[in-house]
Image 1: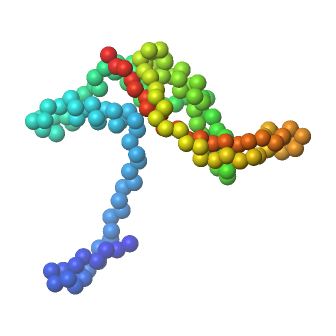
Image 2: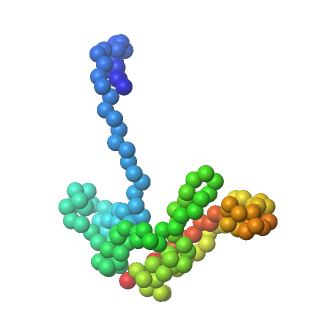
Image 3: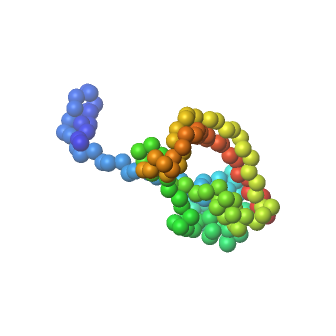
Length: 154
């Protein structure tokens, strides 16, 4: 792709190759926590270069908790299921609760359901696919939920 640079009178001059824009990935949750805590930890008069020079640990999180939050997921705990024509990866709810208890302690966090919405409900066959004798009539229901997780640090 080339881009023509306009001259002062509006006419196009020699074209130059366009530089591709780098693809940006969305930030991880821990990165968002760290950047928010850094901005709160610095006084308003501090220059921005000071925050880049000195790494700031989020207040209240221990080095062990930060290491656990930064660690990759154990792939053995990631489940997959078919939904429509694609495979969906997910963590089971009990596993997420167990990890939060392990990292923050039994009483170190809480969750609050903000909203629940039924997005689909229909009569369908329930049971193992491929063999009609193992399937029976039932209902398929899909919900989405918005949940707030609050960590009590320190």
